Length: 421
Image (cartoon, rainbow, N blue to C red):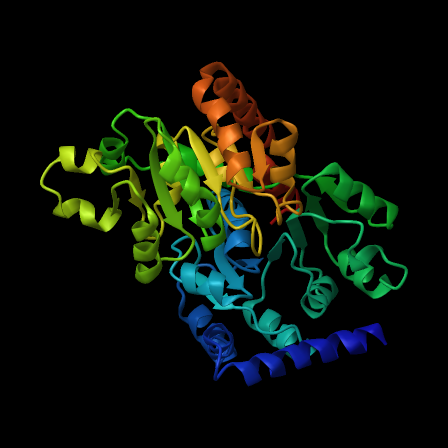
C-alpha cells in the first residue's frame, strides 16, 4: 500500500509541476528538460566513442553536485575507461552544470515512476550508481538492486525526525536496503541507521571538505581584489541576501576603522546592487567597473566592492580576514566551508543554520558566530578585529577542523575498487 501511495505521489508531483510550468520559469525548465529524454539518452550513448561502461552519478541540485564533484573526478582518474553519466533533479543544478567537462553525459533525471526508472536503466545500463546525500528514489534503487548493479550513497546525513525512523516508515526504510553501501557524514547518522537495522553503512564524512580543499589548492589570483584590499583587513559577505544586507548596512556605515568589504550577492540583479550602493555612505564600485578605472589609486579609494559575476566567490576568500555567509535568515545557510578552508572566522544569521552539521561544528569550536542583529555582530566583530591573537587562535582551530575532515572521497574510491569494476 505504501508503495502505491509513493508512486501516486510521484505522478501527482509531475502533474503539479506541469500545471505550474506556464507561470513558473523553474517549473517550465523542469518539464522542458525532460522532453524526449529517452530518445536523446539513447542517441548520445550510441554516438559516443570508446567504452560504454558507465558510472552514473545523481545529484539533486547544485549543492549536492559540489559534494559529488570530488568523487566524480577521482573516479574518472581511477577508472579512466568508464564514461560518466551525471543527472540532476533540479533545474538549479542542471542549468548551471549542464556543460560540466567532467561528465560525458549530463541529463535531468526522469521522475521516479517504475516505467521511467526501467527505461532509464535499460538505456544507460550503468555498471555502478552513486547517489549524493538525500537522494532515495524507490523505483530506481529497486531496479538497480534487482539487476545487481552496485548503488552507493555518500555524504548522506540522517536525523531522528526523518520518516525512515518512524513506526510507519517501514516502506522508506526498505529503500535504504537497496543500497550496496551507505557512507554517512557522522556518527549520529551511523547510529540511527544501525539501530534501524541497516547494516551496510560506514562513516565516510562529508566530501564537500575534499571539494573545498581542491578549491583552495587551485584558487585563482585576482590582482584587482589585491589592489582593492591595499593591505587593509577585509570582510567578505558571501551569498548575500537582502536580509543579510539589512543587518550589516548599519555596521558598514558606522565602523570607523580601516576595513575593506566585498559583497557577493546570492543572485546578480543590477537594480538590487544599485539600491544597496545608494544606502552606503562610503564609496563603492562594482567589479565590472574596475577596467574603466584609470589607476589603482581610484580603486583603492573605495570601501566596498560588489561582485557582479558568478564563479569568483570561492577564490575571493583567500584575501579576507573575516567572512559573513548569507542565507541563514531565509531558506538556509550557504556554503561556509569555502571560507573555513582559508581559516576565516565566520558569521551568519541565527535562524536557519542548525541543519548544517559544519555550522554547528564551527560554532562549538568558536570559529563561527550566529548573529541576531547589528549590535551583536558589531560587538563580536570588534573583539576579533582588535585582538589579532584571538583571531589567529580561531583561524587555527578552523583550519584544523577542515584538515581533520578531508578524506571522504578516498574511502568511496577504495570501496569502489573492492567491487572489482
